[in-house]
Length: 318
Ligand SMILES: C[S@@+](CC[C@H](N)C(=O)[O-])C[C@H]1O[C@@H](n2cnc3c(N)ncnc32)[C@H](O)[C@@H]1O
Image (cartoon, rainbow, N blue to C red; front, side):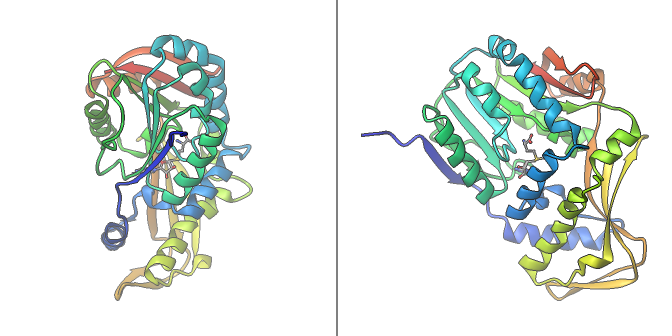
């Protein structure tokens, strides 16, 4: 009998947390909502559309770095590992590494349940030999592997510069939690978006086709949907700016007029020009990032980059 190779675990329940995070975030000034809430099914689809935009150099540059260096990466890591990917999304980038690494199992962990289902079913069709333990979880709250995962050297793969969504202190805490998950003598392969010219950065997060604007505004649609709130999307505008002092792109939703929003019987007032801060994407130099990873207990093994130094992929050892 053929053994089942794709397993799905739901270790996450979102609804109550989402409501309380949104209510406390909208009560603050400036208002903030954590970026993990972008990713309902529509948000995940919109993110995939962003990765194909001409202005969004990040995905195509990282993919090229991974393709060009897949053999070298496999030489460092060896075969038969357990490949863990927090925020695996569409599980697209890992495909580049699978033939070289021949992992014993692949464990994508993502908050976006339906999207993870579809992505891992597609992956299982493309790589029928691969054992997949797809895990729906919130990695910012808890880092846990399903109990059935086999033993072996663990490799954490964290592409997409998703580490930039944490501020540097949170990033160190997240990396420390990752070292607990993968244990000693393990690897971390991580994508870093490098500091660069403001206009390149700002257009990557504010594209001319307005897909990133839709992605940002979808957060309000999701809140309307899930909590019968009454955000009028026509009264909010997407804004992305590079805060050079803090080395981060900030995404905001700007209220274009005086307005009130009702959510779960709570009233929120916004003046014209007030914002909801929805995401940070920190940018690093290679040296800054190595320093940060050292603080979390990782040692640098290798760095691969593109000729224009837009993006880099780092390999660390725990
Ligand atoms: C910026 S996308 C990156 C996707 C993919 N790793 C890539 O490099 O293209 C972030 C991914 O992480 C997931 N994600 C964001 N916050 C998360 C959290 N706190 N816990 C688990 N998954 C999360 C999202 O659902 C999404 O798939």
